[in-house]
Length: 326
Ligand SMILES: C[S@@+](CC[C@H](N)C(=O)[O-])C[C@H]1O[C@@H](n2cnc3c(N)ncnc32)[C@H](O)[C@@H]1O
Image 1: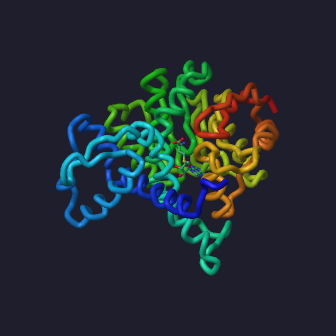
Image 2: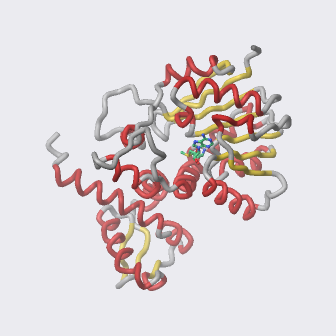
Image 3: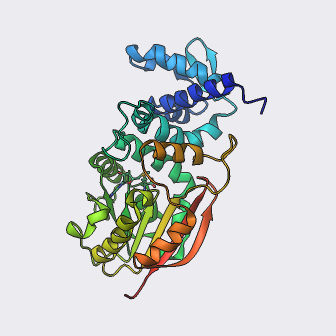
């Protein structure tokens, strides 16, 4: 334990925030676009330059970037590793930062009672970002999705998964999300990929889905990284039944979810378990374990056909389910 000095832990927190900030300021995108070219600080708005420079100096500590000339930066040896994971940093420190601030404020925290102020647009973009490499190919590889005619993606975020499924498998898509900011981002993404006719997105609450949505063409439902938003358990059971009612001809559901980790917490745990559980505890939101999902899905009218572990994010599983005749 000697190596985890208070200074290292404190400084890691600062660096983690700086990675999220750099992502929000487009540093990773810009360096990727420029590739072997250099990124120049003068391209940033004047009022941001000093902060972006400071952020870059922090990233240079862990070799994400290197300053090759005054105010001219290029990729460092660790760039690709951090670029692949930056979405997790943005999700926690940029998208959910306000929830963490209020959680540590006894007089202002309102665990479980008020909607917590999170940045839904940033969250949608961040999960879409790490999902592109880690989840989209996994979901599209399941025969239930690969053979679908129309997929409804619940909690669709920025719709990157539906776009990937359309491109790789040819299925039409319907995205549903509670957040209008997420739906706005999804619409912009869909427009930019030219799938306006094939993928539609709408603001709706999965917990009462059948009040707003009825689509007999949907044969496959996906729901990634939002199943925990349907808890507590009775709400989850009724939401799973709502999905059946909204999509009467959907006979399969792929629910992909990060579950409560079963092992003791360690500083070396994979991303995002420690942050995921801490954040949801901070918001007073319950994270179900693997066994709880295996029990609740049949109660909601979905038989679990198989469970496929996903290596990153940590403690994440895909539950491939079939409609139960009830
Ligand atoms: C962690 S993000 C995951 C987004 C996307 N599925 C992905 O994998 O990248 C969870 C999403 O679920 C949405 N969400 C949460 N509760 C919801 C509800 N009751 N109905 C519809 N969408 C919901 C949030 O607005 C957010 O966009």
